Image (cartoon, one colour):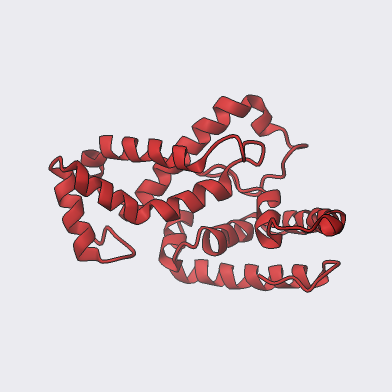
Length: 216
């Protein structure tokens, strides 16, 4: 079974074997190969109320320690590619962080429009809109951009939830088609068709927004 989806598989497998035998330096090198992708995941799915208060790097560090603790369990049954296993651990750490800081506020539908309810913390329409529009805004443009963001959130919320999640996985987490299919539990062809459809719908939404054109 192929454990790694990116980088040099032979090097990664060698590092994994060394890490499994207790080589902490090899584990550090191995985890670093995936840390940027994990940080992108955490930053994207972190509740906006925690952004600026919690550093995604701290979440990644906790995930690193837990992954090392359970590495032998993974190696006994590597049912997922290594990165997706790490992704799951990082996602669990993020969920714990949300529960600790937000508690019942996580379920307050008036504060956030949830678009996905699965193993990962929900990616909200607000998070998707922020990523699509970017964060750099001139003071003179702030009011217009805020209005555009509201329209975009409303439009995203009308999309099929699975299509929105495919966009989150492929476009923002930058998972491969195969990884996306495994996360969603569907065939790779079906995941690819979902992505193409979602991307087409997203482009239609962006074209219709005031102040455009906006690009994916």
